[in-house]
Image (tube, rainbow, N blue to C red; front, side):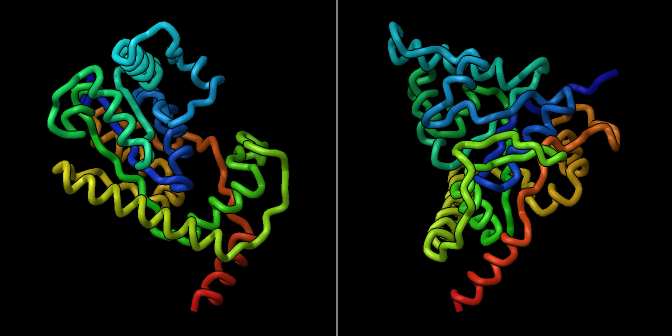
Length: 254
């Protein structure tokens, strides 16, 4: 007899280049943990908006649009399962909370609003311990335009025309500071809201994806996929250039 899920939804509380695309792909592949993605970005790509069935604003009041948007996002994030999955970056949390307030006004906290919208929520803090590697990955992606590749090396997501990345100490330093600030903000928010998240570290996810997925499924109370049944849909982009930039940055930062 299948067990009853402990939660109705989960939120991957992430930062850029922390392995969130890999984890979303793996969780969707379980067939029981929804189809998580970033449904509440400041500017959703029109192609994705159409795919998710997100409503346009024209002809709707703010309240009606917020209600329709939340309904469509939950349907998309559930996929063909009963579990809603959401990837959320810290900078979009405020906008999401404000949207929910239009549908469920007067609630005293972000946590209460998220519960009103998504039911029982498991909060998952996806964190990358090596922030310098994360910052280098972000700078390389922004410069080269290439954000994700498949296990076979085929391009999956490119946001600009190809360009050879160039080492930039100032830009890496700025990204590093920004990523550290975002993770600090997540931790402060968890404490403020009285939330003890399930922490998944990028380094563990990268080394043993199946184990991290099993940890999440177990926490959610859904069936854990059998070993070997999940195949990562994206591959690492870190290479010799990444290592060289990191060594150079550390030397210059001394």
